[in-house]
Image (cartoon, rainbow, N blue to C red; front, side, top):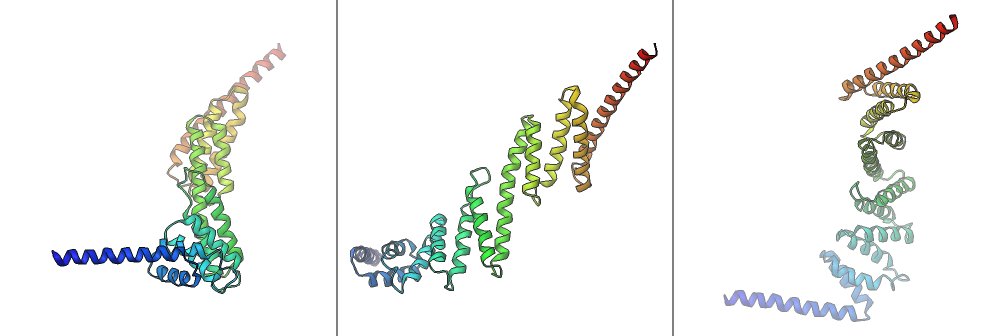
Length: 281
């Protein structure tokens, strides 16, 4: 028991002395000592305390040969603490301030990657996703032969699919609210903006379904025009996804539209015959 208590007391004393020593260093004007300690703390993965020292050094070290390393490790301190907003900002500043160094490529990539990591769930505001796409594409343009390019393209695809998911859920909401015209426009916009999206098949099907329901609820004078658009939507869907899980439902919808068009045609023929009989009389 005595040995255990002595050991605990020893650790506590060492910790207390170390804390006092660090506090004194923070208040001192010895930039070299701060720099050496910051490096030591960083190498021991004590990013929080290393960051405190780098924070004091980064503003005064611009004209020194240590400036580059301070900026580099400062950004990494934020990165290792998962503060991706700040990490992205300082990686970008490093790439801007030291464009010709060996770490410039890495830092520009990490700046974009951190913005990607800050991208929220699809249901939230997607400003970060849009910004990440822009930054990742800028990296690809600046470093087309980089080993990071495949990763950038993969991340861009993931972000674009997230944006497509957000738009798809909104378009589907219009459909469920029976706002079929808004649903048709929204689904078509998804196909134009994200032609390779995972939601392409279902979007085409819901354009067909929305077109059919829109025609069904239309006034008589508009029915034929809208039924024909539904037929066109059916042909688009079937030409691209002939083996889709929605095929049978699509065929049922098409059959109903064909009956409507046949009924409209029959009604017009009856009217024509009546008018001809009147002329004969």
